[in-house]
Image (cartoon, rainbow, N blue to C red):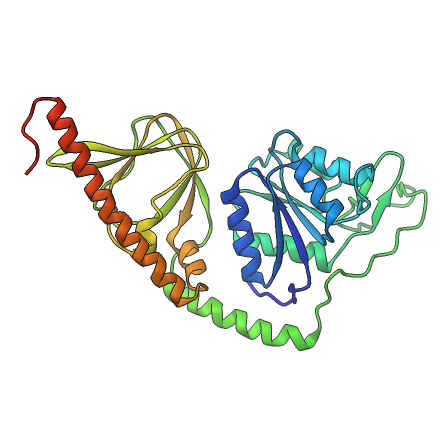
Length: 332
């Protein structure tokens, strides 16, 4: 991925009801050079932000309550609630069915991006929306960017246009040579370094049946997880017996500690019911950590050390209490 545009002046609004999804997209945008990002947890809050702030680009999730991404887009394009009806909108969706894509296109989105999102695919959509804007159509049946993404030469007599093609608007972001070349060289160097390190930065999604062990205590950590639906039990073994540490519900994250401090898993994770998780690979998390100041990393590692210690002490205390209740001798 080559970042050849200066995105520092761009104001981006992320609308998603999952704070972890917002956090991932925000981190990716920062890695592209974006510095001005605001967030909203639902469509109505996003509309309010469009009223109050200058926004150059919107990334909105498809599936939200009380207003989904399609209804949000239609409301923006109607101009009934906000004045910036032509703001570029990128729809992000976990559903890739053609009818969903067509529905979003007919609502007036500029780009459609399917989850799980990779940094590369996100940048391509952002770049295209800002550098190659399409003419804005305002008609009785459709309001939004021109849906003709490809110009074709049709046989004589088949042209359906009733008016000349709309003029192509100016790019929101230019690609000045003075910025592009140094940025390209820097991106190539970063890509070479990433290739040496190995690993993928792309998130994915996994489904676990009830009772499935997601990872076991003592294993090396290669992935962190965010619960999208379902529940996950965190269990630690003491004297050969499983002792519960806690339960992770929707939007909860687990398994991240082993990725940060490179220690083995301190406990096991098991699906308490049929569960769907977003999987964050170690390479993606490390890529973000590498941009973090050393002092912050030191503080985080210290906190993790204390958390692991408290976790061991907690599970031993719970084991003693359980043993006492069961009439057994407490652990030594």
